[in-house]
Structures are given as C-alpha cells and as structure tokens.
Image (cartoon, rainbow, N blue to C red):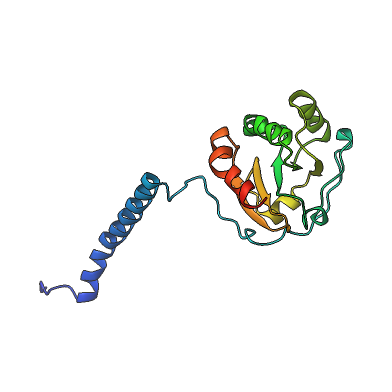
Length: 192
C-alpha cells in the first residue's frame, strides 16, 4: 500500500463545503446590511403583476352586502384616482388588524374593492356587520382561483391600481397605520 497524495480533484471536493459556507455567510451579511439600511424588506413579496393590468376574472357578489361585485373590467380604468383591491376573509386574524385602516381609507374617499377569499358567505357578511364595510365593490372567491391568478400568498393582501388600471403596488400582510403613512400614502399621491 502506498501513501500517495490524493488526486487534485479529490482535494478540491474538500474545499467545496467551505466555499458554500462562505457564500451563505456572505448572503446572510448582505441581508443583515439590507435590514439595517432599510433596503431589504423580509415581508416584501415580489409580484409579476406590478406594471401590468389585472388578470381577467369575474366574481359572484356577496349577496348579503348589497354591493356590486368586482371583475377585471372594473379595474381597467380610467379612474378619477387610484383604487385598492384587498383580498380578505372573516377567519383571518390579521384582516381584523388591518380593518380600521381600510375603514379610514374609505372615509377619505379612496375606493377599496374587496375580494372575499375562501370564506363562507354568511361568515363574511357577519364580519362586515360586526366590523363595518370598507368596500365599494365586493366579490366572493370561494374556491380561491382568482387569488391564484393574482399570486396571492395569503390574506390579507392589498394591491394598488393606478388611474389607468395598472397594478403599481402590492403588500402581503395586514396594513398598519405606519405602513399606510410611510408606503401607501405617497403612492396614493403619486398616482392620484
């Protein structure tokens, strides 16, 4: 038996885990720097719909609400100002958290179109009776197919549609007063 040195290719395989660990460490450092400077948003979810019109859809109305339904035709513009599309459900706890923001936006005259996601119509109607109805239009996506076309990860999720019917912003999660003040209001002014 000879103690010949290992071939070069085997030695490089020993360094591969070190290289992967170094790359992972560098990626983690970049993420931490982004969190520190505000360039990285861990809650930010990219959307292929930004800069495009709404996907084609037609939803049935929530009968108990008495509101007209929402469809892609309603989102094609032109509008007098920007419109929000909010995916929500009565069983969604974060939807309760963001509901006061939607009610405030409605009082300020900003149209909010609701899409009730995978919910029972009776439960959705009871939610609106209990918490108030911020929606100008409201459709029911009980099977969740429209949400899939929009790329919804979960509820609540909100989209900003500009005056020409182009999706300009998306937020996955409950809108807070801080988010509305820092992110949404500047966009509402920009696309007014």
